[in-house]
Amino acid sequence: MHDDDIFTGSLMEASWLTLEQVAAACSVESDWLVRHIGEGLFPHVESIAGTWRFSGASLVRARRMRELERDFDAVPELAALVADLLEELDALRQRR
Amino acid sequence: MQFKDYYQTLGVARDASADEVKKAFRKLARKYHPDVSKEADAEARMQEVNEAYAVLSDPEKRAAYDQVGRGYQPGQDFRPPPDWDAGFEFSGHGFSPHEAAGFSDFFAELFGHMGATPRGTRSAGFRAQGEDHHAKVLLDLEDAFTGATRQINLRVPQLDAQGRVHLATRTLNVKIPRGVRAGQVIRLAGQGAPGVGGGPTGDLLLEVQFRPHPRLRAEGRDVHLTLALAPWEAALGAVVSVDLPGGAVKVRVPAGAQSGRQLRVRGHGLPGEPPGDLLLDLQVVLPPADSPKAREFYETMARELAFEPRRSGRT
Image (cartoon, rainbow over the protein chains, first blue to last red):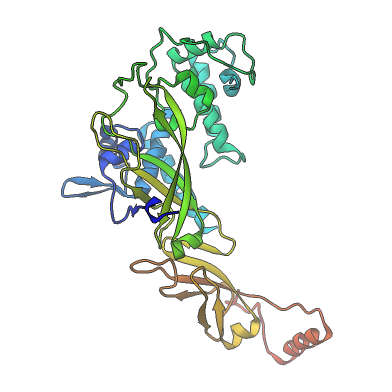
């Protein structure tokens, strides 16, 4: 394997995701994200100088909420509640 | 290619109403939800259920599937007639092209036009900018200690000149940075879907998860490990060697250590700026009284030590 064939990525903490990147990765519209942030359904998203920045965990959350809304016609608050519980479950499983 | 019976997958009759299809899908989506399902093959089953629903919930796709699939049995060898899909126009329906990449070759063959016309000009479903691809990557905790290069296989949808979607396997060698933590995302700039009409290429986002480790458990940057101690090590104090993926470290156990107590060794968790801590959950293990000599030791202790383990406040 040549060194040229090896991709070196950047870790997301140093380089946060933008609104557009999360929207594209989760196949949601940017408006969907902005609306959900506005309603307080993304607790860990930060706004720096008017620009939203997302951590890797927000990406998982956005994907879960979108699937819950799509698969079960869940209202956004219910999807957020289930996402909260799944995050809690992740933390408990890590501790096992 | 085997014919797939989507009605059978969802467990509905061929004349099921849209409501019945939706109800059956939700029931299965709950049963096989990858985050909570107890079924061993939940993720694969959910993929099948999603695929069946993507077809049966969309009136255009369902009509086309009914027409082309007439007379076929599940598992039977299937070849769609040439130009069978003339007259149908498919639009994306809830599932992104990237999600559809997990669907079967049968689906790709039938509905490969998703979001694109046969002439290769794209419909409104596609963005001008290449999409960011998102995949989960399973690593060993050792990789986070030492850094590693891992080969990752991805199934990605690719559009040919006719606008059909084909599934291709892409193999990437990715350098895993030291100190990576569960839930973090490694971004490979420019390795996502190609841009459309001169738009920039998307990124590849790899979400890191660790396989369960027999001894170690990471919590953020901190690493937990159960440290077994002999009674004399716990009682008298000792310097013990702890094996970690980055090499062994020597740890001083204070005299009077008890099971259930935790020792924090600063800076010996996952590498980083600052590095995490190593948290040792102490567990005193008793040697078995399986020889006359061992029994004698225990009997001497019982006789000589004024020790009441159930004294109030001890347990």
